[in-house]
Amino acid sequence: MITKTLEITKKKKRISNTRKFSIISYGCQMNVSDSEVVASILEGIGYTYSNDLNESDLILLNTCSIREKAEITVRKKLETINAIKKNKKNLKVGVLGCMAERLKEKFLIEEKIVDLVVGPDAYRDIPNLLKEIEFGNDAVNVLLSKEETYADINPSRFNTNGINAFVSITRGCDNMCTFCIVPFTRGRERSRDPKTILSEINNLVKNGYKEVTLLGQNVDSYLWYGGGLKKDFNKASEIQRKTSINFAMLLEIVAKNFKNTRIRFTTSNPQDIDKEVLETMAKYENICNHIHLPVQSGSDEILKKMNRKHTVEEYRELVKKIKKILPDCGISQDMITGFPNETEDDHLNTLKLMDYVKYDFGFMFKYSERPGTLAAKKFEDNIPESVKQRRLSEIINLQLKHSYQNLFNYRGKKVKVLIEKESKKSSEHWCGRNPQNIMVVFPKGKLKIGQYADVTILDNTSTTLIGQII
Image 1 (cartoon, rainbow, N blue to C red):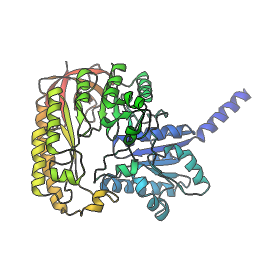
Image 2: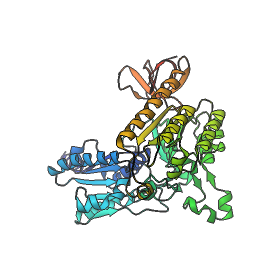
Image 3: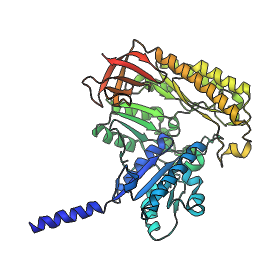
Image 4: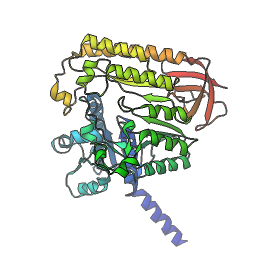
């Protein structure tokens, strides 16, 4: 009896001494995926996840530097966290990701608002950096890598619905768009061993996941030839080049090996997605018919200043090819308005391109100058804020018009929906996405999360399809 009491006491002590961490992710899906890698590393040294900042011993913000607004949001969150820290002296605060690399000295040394600064390629070093904090040393590592893909780390799905998961297949970017900080914060492009990708997906399927999104800054430029930077492919041996695997081949391998799993991918750059990828999508029913295809502008002049690798005509031809090979494919966009020297004609050309494509949805932003980018060095941010806002409003309004019309065309049609969660507006309704990545809401009936539903569409808004189970 005494022995059992001692065992229970020891167990309670271990539980009470367990260190807890919280991660808040901002920005792109890659940051969400990276946070899962970080969570796995922390769990490996004895931490457990908590969604309550007040009970955490370590709070990490995985940040984005793509726009000024994202950085302002992070700064405000840091103010809230540091208010918690005043009453909890042992709390450690860290900044990860793109913003960490850009503002390391400002955050850690000048302002002293964080204890830990870690770049996207240095997450394995977090256990060592936490020890450095204990010794009173600066804890910073933002070194870029030519090889790191975290391929051997099984991400911890610490904040998931158990249905959808991201699987990273590439890291970094070689495109050097002038408005973008990513090549400087995430390094050069390299691809992950396909065997490790298949292994990760297999684990997800075994754990009940129904949908996987292959993820990268530029998934269509995936190229595995045994490891190394994509730019060094020409230096590879003849055998390496002949046995290399491109994105279309990887997509087919995944689709064939996981026939009962929905496959998505993002993001595609127009210059890299090719006919082979489109034909692979058409060949396999479990590959969802949706392509996120950032264009950024409908003006050749602006595209040239952005250092985009496509013209408007090339983009239009690609859209035409997509619609021919995949007639029911959903297409979404990224758009930046108010880029330096953008004229009214440039803006009208963007609206004209939107009228041609008629995107299903999009992500639209005013240009935000980012220190360190080529655009910040080469061009003056000379478009008045009022003009940027007016042009953005016109782009958004046109997109809402196209979105509503596209979704209206679904009325009376049957769609297959993977149930992901309960509707935010009604506990009596489920919601999930169709293959074109459109959210569908419908009465629950007897179905459960993770099941598929055949739904007849009865109504729509500009963002959502509304229907009933067949």
